[in-house]
Length: 117
Image 1 (cartoon, rainbow, N blue to C red):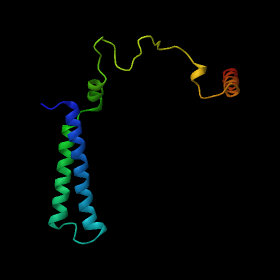
Image 2: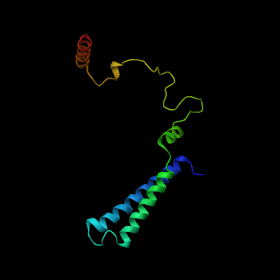
Image 3: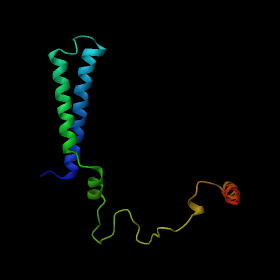
Image 4: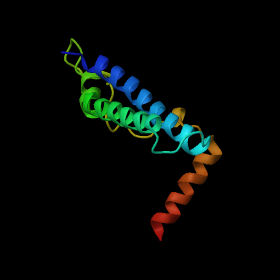
């Protein structure tokens, strides 16, 4: 069985190949006008492209499954991306804000005005 990461990589390649085949069929028949849309070449390109897209859709992992695989628990049991000493509701940190002191004061004044209304 393929790993989820490898299956997603293969599925992405199949998506691209299928899109290129459908695009080639449209280009040859509609844009360039070299052959009619019902000629064997554009029909084959379209059918093959749609088939590759369907295979890729069935092969690709659902994003939630892939994210669980990528960001699962570490060896020590904590979830990836969580800082061990981080508090979920630590509050506002003015040092991390892109606003300067004057802009923060204006923002707080507007918030007070909105609360009074």
